[in-house]
Length: 598
Figure 1 (cartoon, rainbow, N blue to C red):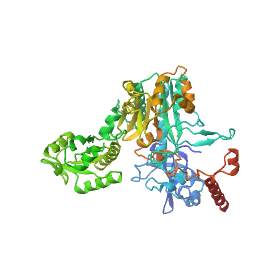
Figure 2: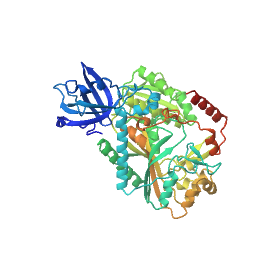
Figure 3: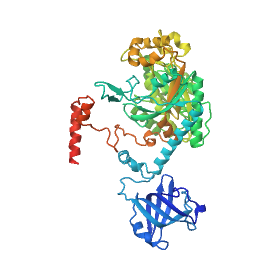
Figure 4: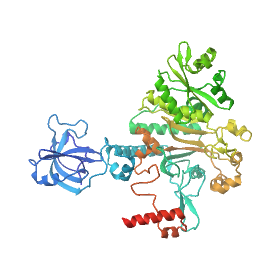
């Protein structure tokens, strides 16, 4: 239906007869001459309806409105001197129309097809098909396509096989709630939708596939936020006969290929690495933003020598005191605002002292002797004019507050270039975490993660000391993905299971199909899964993954466009052998009444 797309015509096209299609982006009537910006996915071309060029099309041209879908035939002409538009690829030409076909009229759109005017989230999602017409949204989906193509090309070139795993599976413990699907042919039984392909990709290694990948759809019934959706896409990978270094090298090569192919950016490798302990000590978080050098310093033992009762009490109760000290001059108004911010995210308060040539100054400085003040300054390398800010609490709370406060300081004080991409690995995560409510150990990630050899002696005696061959890749303070080298031997798997209070028999009842596969010569293997949506969002300079998903759900896990989730009728309940409860019946009745009224 067309000879050219709307980004292809240039001065070299002048004099050509062309056919273009698209949507009316804007319409302007200048004294009887009508100018229309004709838009498609590729760009915009200005088309001109001039009665002196062809009067036969003017009646139809006068009826054109925004978002009409049209086809035009005409002649390419150069724009008049001084009328070029340098912001358009086609800005040096325009097409004078001698034939117009209105393919489809459009009602007045409920949202503007304009990047400069963004509607609210609910109306954008309700009219997603219009929202996706906006150039910025099309640009994001084009970039997502390029990212996935780069992934497939790189991994295929490195001997990976793209293999699909099932969407209807047996329920297995993965950390979040499963979405469940009733079986019509097996009354009372249910499938689960996969939270990840974890067990299947390990079975593929037992099967001898050696290198597997998949752009896997994953589904989790959990509370939502900007970087979570009930359904999302993972770049899922697994390799046999590898160690951690092989995983790091392969993943760094993948990231280099994506950034080079899509953004023409040469990433520097190898990426920085931090142990989990180092990351928590310096940044307070296991996904640090390393674009700026502002570190946390634990000063518990130093401040315990002071007469400041709050700090001494926190240490006595097993807590810690950490300090953050940006080398920037902060006024009292700034400090008060930061105290309020820290309290809003869970801090009981925030102490502070200003560094001067003669020591520390604040309303609590009198509790710190000159010797203790000097120790603090030396420990933090604080410069005169800067402000030391302290959080005192149990370690998890202290680290969480300061990690978020550090990121806020980085943004407020412009400590980094927002266009930079800074990757880092966080390694040697604890294999177990202690649950105070149950007084028991549980896996921090999953029970198939291989412990480090130098920690095996502590498995039974001190599980908290056991770190694993676990790794996460972070970018600009966001976790892109994580994985581990897996346990592939029965005796070690039994030892790990005993730590969490699970017998091998209990494990077989829950995911015996994997453990049974391990009995038949399972190779050493490991892998990783990256969030494709997160990668695409960060490459677009945004954090909300909904902006790079064509049809996302809202914060209530609903789709305003198609009305899902929706009720089902009694016949469908009966076919699935399900008896709806009172809540479901009330919802069904309400929906039926609504449908009847419509």
